[in-house]
Length: 86
Length: 112
Image: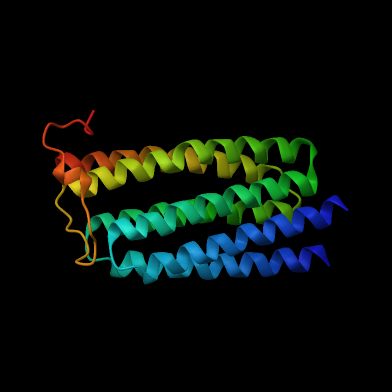
């Protein structure tokens, strides 16, 4: 029963990722796309954790930790690029 | 019992995530979108990780807590850097906005 509920949660989070993806396609400026990518990253971390809860694999949590670290570095680099135009 | 509490906390986090993504689509301006997306999605993801900690415990819970602390540290920092970069690159505010303290700051007091 618990696994069915978590599966419904995974579908809802997939809908959220799809909405952020629409904003990433549509966004008028580059900053809008960067915000959408940041939102997709944080949501994908939640998705990975829920997948690890369903499959009972610990390695998904390690993947989500490294993924959030790399996404943070990329986001800060992108913000510096938007600020100065390197 | 702890499984039920964990599922309830995870469901709250999923609701926050979905509302944050809806706000990203619906709001009119990049700064409003940053408000909606970053705050809601950060809180939602941290609630999901906290729910996994309550639900499972053990090694998986420890890793989830570590990941939650990391997201709480990095996500507002990234959003702040992104808002500053967008303002400096000349993205206009929405016409319904009433104040812009960062543009009024002549001496650069806020820019340190």
